[in-house]
Length: 200
Image 1 (cartoon, rainbow, N blue to C red):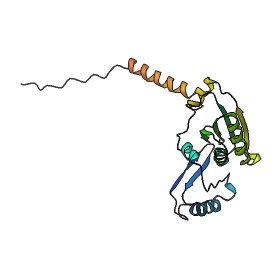
Image 2: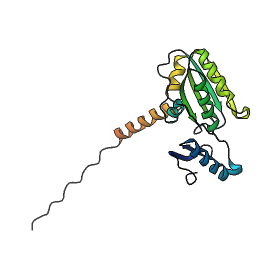
Image 3: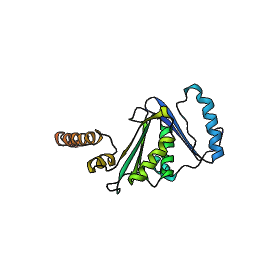
Image 4: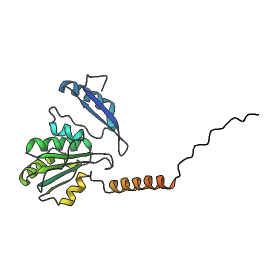
């Protein structure tokens, strides 16, 4: 792909479970040319693909990790989960273009068994419209689940703001406790006294 076209950026690496993901950005014609080269090389091993000629800025921000649920009050939450990263990104792009919603989070592959999901926040009507548009963008065999929650509970919102991983905060607290315990138990190393020369 990099040899076939001039791209603004090309990010590639492994994701779970044992897959290789490539994200390419640039002018539409260049990305189309690069994608064609990638498809030729992938052959029968291709899992999914996606071309977004005019990706929404919210999706770019979410891919860069700057999304979040903070400040959304008790409004509705929408969820779209798919089997592949490409399907979720496509659904997210269609959803935010269809309604006045915030793309609150975009979780891709790692720690999800290769699946991915997108979270949308807004009024009930807007979230319903966004989820419907996003789901329409996904092939039926790739859709895992779609949900609209009219009033998200505050504790659930807090969990989602922390990243949605159940054990991550507990692991972090445990690691901090172990470090603090080790510092208290391990005595500081004493510096050996300097040797003095004896005069004979």
